[in-house]
Length: 511
Image (cartoon, rainbow, N blue to C red; front, side):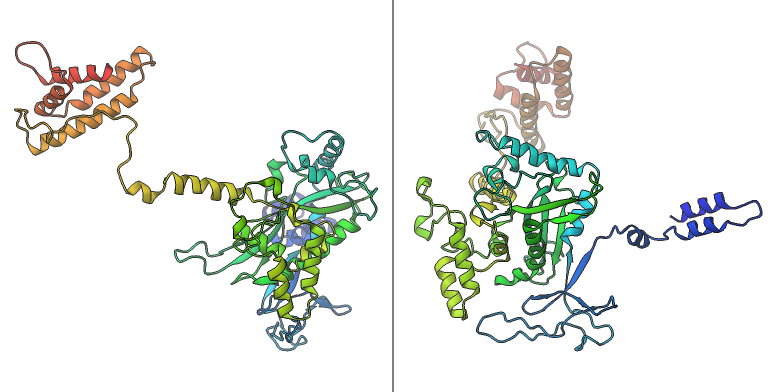
């Protein structure tokens, strides 16, 4: 930017070394740093800083006094973690008073405004056509019989039967967009060690809440410029039990509005007069621990090990009679979650959780949420790091530990006779010559494996000539011993030279 300003200044300078007033004003408007560029063009996105309770993870949005841009937060946490317990009352700010100068949250959660993300997405050329096309093609095919093969999420029966907001039975499908923009997203919550993996296991843990727009083509769907990062869950430990709900609440506030009422944008890439955009979470894709924490189900190692069907207890594990598996009812699950949330005592909450395996999750604020259909299997953890890893590591034993237990099995083997197995041979060999016998065996095996009779004649000759050159470094007694073992001794009378033994061994390889 400095170079651009210098070039323009040179171009604007008049013969007497002066600048016109309007040219000087233009030069003053050129930003000097990346920060000023983001500020002028509003490229940094709109974020909201929440104060986080260091003890219970409750989040508090900022408030502003009239005519002031300074954010104010409560100084003490007023959350009640358990229904029959007291208030948390943990200090939230670096100073005890919100009026104190420099009073900042001890722990923060930065939330990227969902409406700001949508505005930036729909402002990009070509995106609006792409997201509309995904809905139109799915709606046109919704009247046809279900496809035999599904190539994307919009081919699934769930998406093609997913209803738009409404309360009556005649409401339209979500993909029947009319003049609106309809977006479907996948939701992901994952935790990671910011200091990378350690030998003793992760000692710190942070999390991310992200979403990917499923209307976009798979080639760009998961690129960072199109992904939505709602926020980074601060460490140093994962939020336990229902504490994750505090971080999901800002996103659910936006998603409820985005589905029920829609968000009106005054201008998009295609429409200068503006359009309404409705968004919904179609699937939640997570590994098993994060999926249970997100939906507030019991752990995958508990008796409630399935979030799709009613299989329960260890006694049902291994049952493959899938005709008897009954899908969990979303209405019942919602009722269990509400009863847990409204319980008056911790003991009652625990009793309900032990009975149904469900706690309250912020996702239940979405009127369409059905975890039995939308909490899907993560293919990376299930297939690549689960089933395939089990097959190759545990069943086939293809690990570094297993490889160290014994020598690798060669691709081709020939039962060569060693010097120890040939006690009747009248050849006396030194230690070095005895070692050469093993080296010759290895060379012959490799020559056979590398030999391809389908190659052109010149390639075959070149291969055999290379084998012959490598044998010239071995002694005559070692070569003779191998020839005797392979029954390929020179048959002519008179003195036999090294080249005669080598020639016969090369012929053996060729045959």
